[in-house]
Image (cartoon, rainbow, N blue to C red):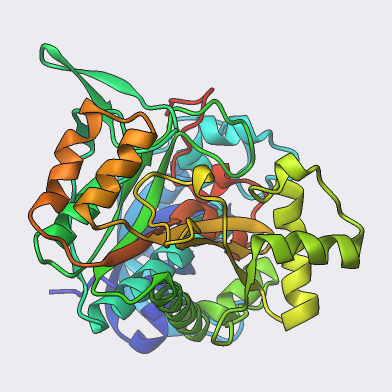
Amino acid sequence: MLKKIKISELKNYYGQEVEVQGFVDNIRNIKWVQFVILRDETGKVQLTIEKSNEENKELVAIVDELTAESTLKIKGKVIENPNVKLNGMEIIPSSIMVTSKNESEELPFNYKDLDNVNLDTRLDYRFIDLRNPKNAFIFQVQSTLIKYMREYLYNNDFIEIHTPKLIGAASESGSEVFEVKYFDNPAYLAQSPQFYKQMAMASGFNRIFEVAPCFRAENSNTNRHATEFTSFDIEFSYINSFHDVMDLEAEMITYGLQKLKDELGSKIKELYDIDIVVPTLPFPCMSLKDIYKELEERYNYKVAESEMKDLTTEAERLVARLAKDKYNHEFMFVIDYPAEKRAFYHMRNDEGVLQGYDLIWRGVEITSGAQREHRYDKICQVAKEKGLGKDVEFYLEFFKYGCPPHGGFAIGVDRLTMLLLNIPSVKESQFLFRGPNRINP
């Protein structure tokens, strides 16, 4: 039985018969010979068919009718040939099967040259857009980074759980929610797994994570927002402070980026002209108040007192510059946010200071994390102060019967990928973008 292999592996099979499948990338049909370039997700290879060889009569007839972007299953011998410009090899096929035929004379656009193709058109035909090797590679990078972040967590005794995305109460945060019909009752798409992560802590799971979709019904038309996105959520117990949460996140990101660089760094450099920067530990950390003070002193950036309760978009951008100038670092933890700007389940200390943080990378917030309030009397008090009632009753029950001190954070996978590869918009770092004006394909 012939072994089906990837094109990138062909150099290991010189002189051997193989089976390869892929798209027809290009066809050259000249007087004495036919050349077909076959493409899979790992590379391209040339098929060479000599017309003068009587045994190739059937193959020649197939190629005569072949169209680019059709798919083939071929069997043949791999030959090392330094005269072939494409990787110095070719396959001499013994059989060609057309597994699907491109019936269109012309593609919606030339995916090999996207410079003048409208982004909306590309998203309408995303399955064509992703035939571009540079675009397809985005998701190999994303998958590899997530693989290694997962690996870090597994190595540190975390387990992966899967929480419901259909929920009965719209109460997790101030963000708008999508309401759906659930038989005869209303239900909502989950904004995050936050409540269920904390339920796991109350269950005694201690260390959990989840990589899953989240939904936000926010009419935000920016390059970094989406109505559906993939969130990498972590929660763990028996922490001493939110600094334990920050330390774990910094270690996980550093581990993931180092492993990504080792595996795909050269390919990322080739396609994106980007060097993966592996951060040093610990990540720098500054209070929100000190951030604004330094931004004014260094860069003459001032905002009204009323805006200093959070980082403005411009302030986030300048934090990247500050991190580089002050610490020679790409990351910056920002702490000491006013408690009223954060969710009710974030812990406050005895002075009312929020026990949480944001993580800024390359001028964009990629994480909000915190120690959670786990004490039943305290969280009931804050929920009451926030005017939250029946919607959070089920959540408050988690803490009534004992729950260890815990904390966690979430990272938007699509935004992380966008920043990593310097992609202009999250629309391109999502496999299929969902936004206020896009629900298809």
